[in-house]
Length: 450
Picture (cartoon, rainbow, N blue to C red):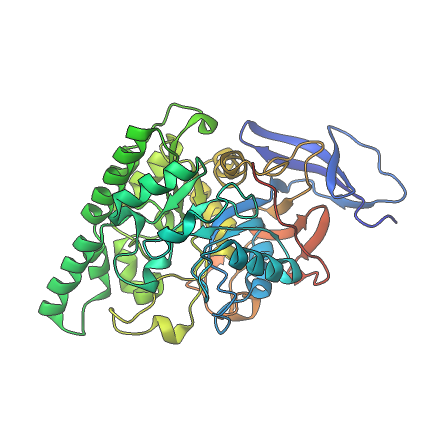
């Protein structure tokens, strides 16, 4: 048997264009034949997939894997294991590690960690904030070792660091490069006003649901509109991360093809799945920045996604320990583990009639690949890297503490049963996840971006 030689037979292959029953042959890390009927070869592993669904491996371009420096709650090994267990085969890591990834040298250090430890493919952002703008002029911002520039998560390094609060920062960056600048879009002054008002009223006992008012629709909309106006004026590339309101979504163009858009946005899965009412059940476990808001916002985001105002879906996977989460409102860390259950959450939304399977593939694989120019990934296509996930959409899956892979060791879904099960995940044609088991000798690759 040749290593990495597989024939997946009679799978329901899902693309944005539709679903077709196909045989898929993999060899040398790539898709080599896709047809209605292929004869098995004696030297390949045959996988019978009748009735099951084959998706391109999901591409999650917004994760916080925490390493280096914050390894008490996550590492590249543990979080990439969670990724492949959920059918995610490529991730892009944000810069808020310790040290923060604010230089090409620190980008390389993080890439070296990923190369040694990641079960999935990977890319790394270069961090940029008000604190390191002066250094950018010394960097080659066309260097493809990093996938794009972002300020996401860097508000932790000091107040008033977000690019959305510094219009002059955009002008400096856009003079240097036409690469993607992806930002966390909230107005810091409005957030600070909200925090002061609620602290005056409640002291340390601010109710968790106040998060939606403190990090409000207005705080998001003001920052997003201000930044978009600047980008449109100069025809610059600007990407808004984890959008949380329908009002913001309507600021974007829904008619242009994605590859022609200069201003774009994404939505993260917590904001599609949860709403204000869920704070009563999950409390600070669903505290995210920007905040999870009303049911109307959740439904509006789903509508905007289907109408193509929103370009793709991410997780904002951001693990913290339970101790860090279960604190009074002002001390509770924002974020949580999501990457292992991204596809199952989306399939739940499909079951509820909110999304189609085709739309899931478009927004989690094809569009991220097109947007970042990820070479030969995101599609089940002859000649492309064989990143894929086989799913039984009718086989229930119960989430327990024992089957979690994220190092933080908890999930809001403990005790919940999803309607679908992830069975197999392939990365570069190598089987890396097999019905609950991580194949620990597999490693992903750094992706190429254009």
